[in-house]
Every structure is written in structure tokens, then in C-alpha cells.
Length: 267
Image 1 (cartoon, helix red, strand yellow):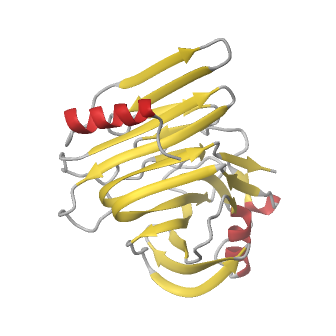
Image 2 (image 1 turned 180 degrees about the vertical axis):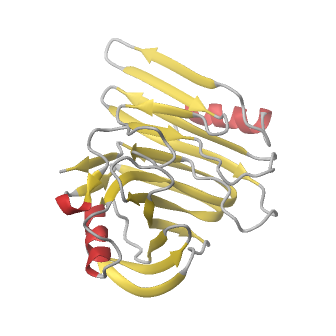
């Protein structure tokens, strides 16, 4: 769905007035009528965030290094019981092929954080829980290089930290000319959707499933990806699923993503 006129106007204002910098503030507007209440929050600070229920939306610019000529914002819009998360970005196209940012939605205990956003995560792999991510609709418009993806962290402890990460599991739902780390191992099908499976090694094991099917996917059964890796002895039952993140890895270019009624369930 296209951004509302208000959000579009905010985005245009930000892009024209603050292009190539981040605006150092959080902007929230609340509109009430007799029947509806609408709230819009936009955050453009580097690594700024906004919490909505069990989700934290973060303007993650982790790979910007010394780059200053960029703009990136996150927003949360609510209307009664419906909500929308979104990101807007504009990054240079002539720097390098490294990931600059990952504006994202965090659910769980990211190893770089001090606590979890929910009591449901971390959870032991041995518990065999169903872990399902879904949304009513999602739209990404991107002129540049990057992806739309889940980033899922596994740890050896139920108190995650950067020292006990064991695996990073990515599920790319859209690819805009980017290549995963590691090398391609095989092609596999999960829930009727075809993915190229990549494996690499960093300070932890890295796995990426890059969707090659053209069909749109609104529900991802994350536990089935875990089961696939477990069947290959690439994940062990003693590990913990710490966090589910969802966002856009950005290498370069301009784009936006809007996600309606995003939800992660652990059953």
C-alpha cells in the first residue's frame, strides 16, 4: 500500500530539507475523531527507535562508518487496532558494496540488547515451538542494491549476548541485486517456496535462504527453516532462538517499505 498523504508529505519534507543528514528528533502526531484515533511516529535519528507493544522498530545504521550524505527514517502508524511499520531511505550509490544499514523490527532478545521485547523469546530449540511471522501486506519499492529479509539469531544461552551467538539465519523474501555472504550449497523448497541456500562462517555460522519463487509470501514458518537446518546437523537442540528481526539490508540507493499488521507468534 502506498504511504498516506501525511506520511508522504513528512517523507518529502525530510528528504528535501534534511537530505544527506539525519534529523535529530522523534515526531509524533495524534489525530482523534469520534470513531477513530490515528497516531503517526517518525524517527530519523541514527539508531533511533520506537516501541509498539512487543516490537521495537529501529533505525539501524550499523554499517554507515564515516558516511554522512544519507537519510534514513522509520515510522509507526496506528489506527484503532490496525498498525503499520515502515522505513524510508536514501543512500549514496558510489561508495562500496558493503551493507550500510538494516532498518528493522525486533521481536525477542537481540544479542546486542540487554533484554527481550517479549517473554516468549529466547526459546530452546528442543522445545519444538512453532515460530510464525506474518503480515497482512507488505510493499517494498527499491531503486538500488539490498534486500528485504528476516535476520534470526541463535545463541548457546537463554541470556543472549554477542559472546554466545552460535548462528545467524537470514530469510530473504526479496532480493534487489545483492549477494549473500558465504557460498551457495543447494536449492531447497520450504512450504512450497523455493530458496537458494547459502552457508558461510563469520564469528558464528551464517545461513541464508534467498527466495527464488515469484509468489508473494505473507506467512513464514520460521520453525520449518530451523527444522531443515537441524536435519542437516547445522543447528543443535541445545541452542536457543533469541530474536526474530525483519527489515531491509541496504547497500545503496533509495527506497521504502511498508508493513501492515506484522506479527510474530511462538506457540
